[in-house]
Length: 506
Image 1 (cartoon, rainbow, N blue to C red):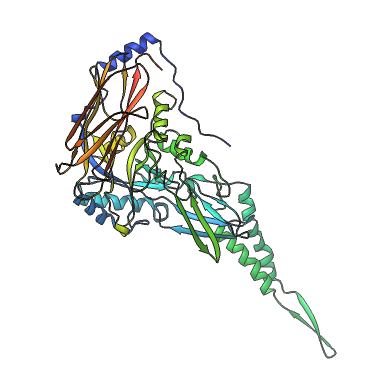
Image 2 (image 1 turned 120 degrees about the vertical axis):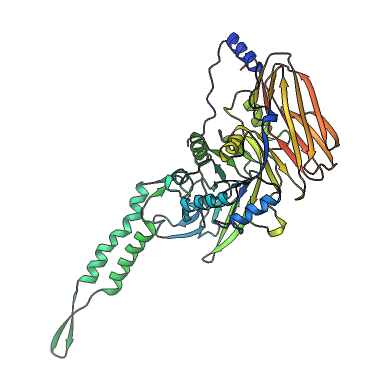
């Protein structure tokens, strides 16, 4: 089985040249200055009634506006089509279940719906996106009573690909992009040949002799039952099997990370953003299909974020237990790899909503992502997501939210914000600064942690507005620094990191 490869190693320039490059970087800001960027509050991963949500897009945007949210990233189901077929004629002898999806209803209709809403609500940027199931697989047997479908909720969100052709070309379970002809295609089509003997049975009139007294009577009768049955099987095979393609990623075997990495790489090549969805969530359930018990099982899959590469982000804050982004956890391990040059790019944390309806007290802005952008547009928001110029927020009420202002790292003359990498000479003094406030200017207790290379470098406790500053001498080793803000109550902010690399180093 093929394994996904990490980022390519880059050749090292001579140390003198690298040092000159590092000094040049220090002489100018790393990118747009923090004060030049505006904060845009957004929600990522929202479903409307176009697929499996309960609210219309207009209702979603209206609720977002009332909370001060300026960007809505839709994540409608790309394709939810689950099938199980008996070998060897899986298409003919199959049971299928399908839910409304972008492919099923048409990418053109999806994008037209968004364009109409965008014209009606110019103050809220509506970003089209899809939630893709790269692969699901079966274990067990219907005859053994242990049939299980795995990983239906192990999904990737895709943004930045906003044309019908781009959406149709995404690889995913059941997608036309992964359809192919194979030896199994020929096997699946074999029952179609039963049409020939079936038609012959219906056409021919075999002689049947019987005696009536001393007279022999010859009768001609068509074989209606046998001929009709053969034709019915052939026609059913055509209807259920056309075009007789098979999925490149068979649902009848576990394929590891290959389907996921293929989707990630395609999105990356086309300039989009691939986001791992809810890596620490789980989904266990059971359904009855034709009287058979079918188990559904998706285990938490945080470790798979370490086995895949080049994706833009992951759900790091949401309304559930989150482990991957915990202090010293998998995310810090991944960021350390990136700081050392062992990964070609970091993975950024976002706030993930997963909003379908307002059942059980859910509300659209409970988990937010704040974007730092030079302008409020779809292109700028997707670029900020790809570049790590975002931070994640978990809110506790609809009237106020904690805000992270001015998170910067200064090294000499260079200033970096989240997502930046600064190249720093040895012994340079670096300073981390930020301010935490509440959107309604209220005074609330908060605790701020500065995380350096997966450990706590400093802690501040106080009330909002709270300004923090941390100064240290750079020790000539690759590093990353990020912030966590805890409180008030269970509110939470998770920043993305700023990286430090030694001048002339790796």
